[in-house]
Image (cartoon, rainbow, N blue to C red; front, top):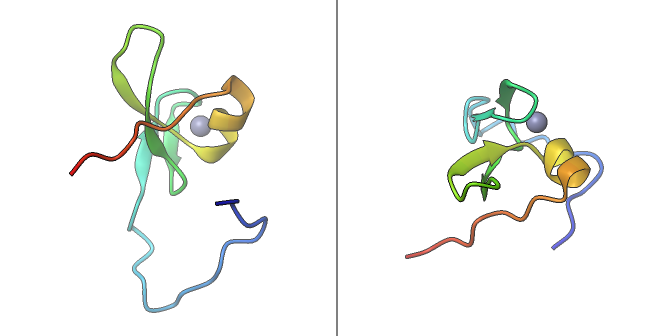
Length: 62
Ligand SMILES: [Zn+2]
């Protein structure tokens, strides 16, 4: 699924949902997803950093 260029504005969803620390640019981002770094540790990376560093999000497990 492609990320839209402009995120949909959903006033009913709290702004804090999905905010994680991006370990690559060292700031909080609401587009951060868990990815594995070169040592195999799971860290969060925002959408821009995933694009810049070619990071693949960790597959969700149930
Ligand atoms: Zn980032």
